[in-house]
Length: 270
Image (tube, rainbow, N blue to C red; front, side):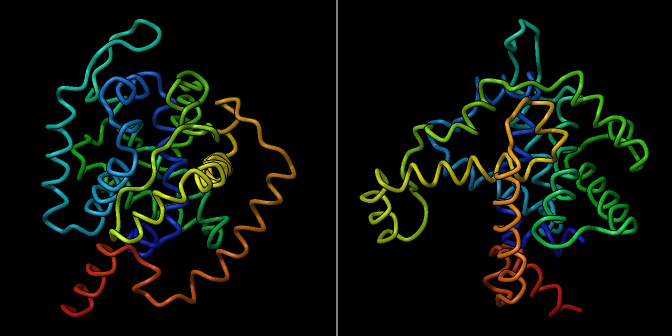
């Protein structure tokens, strides 16, 4: 299932919700606040994060190497959170939460942007997501092993640990000062740089809307994020268009480049 959904361009719409849920944990939010370049290089960080995630699913042997690289990189990330508590990025509960957020976001996002999962599909997706956790070096003892174990764990983290951290507020701020995109072909970058003073506001409002809207409602409520009935109706109208348009796109446009190449190579070798 992950080979079908993780490289689909609709995953780009879901990713900010998962990232925001991750940094809502005070330890993870503090680590990002203290050590990340998300403010100074948001496009580069986003590109690297997306490539890393794609490698977990489509990388073959490179997936394990990427998991090792991430653990090595996170060894140095430690400090004190906003409550004065010491944190380390590789504390099992913290690292496992970063991984755990993917499952409820995929489940919720697919229900809106594709179709609701059946019970069997939910279980299969969770089993595959557990395998991703193993690729990342997370021990089975630190991850709920079944859906029945996952949901009580998930709700406990929502109730006891999450909050609207400084980083959460920045990620959903429609007025955040995001620099112009610096990735892609040079002509496109030049055009975007010139037009960014006019494009930044609409882009940020759409990003904030989709980040909050594609977050599972219980996570949204746990963070105290406002969401109106009118916003929900607007989101569902957008989702309806996405459901109609994306499935009819050619595979090379529907899938991100790394995923597209991996899927083609897998078919060629079958």
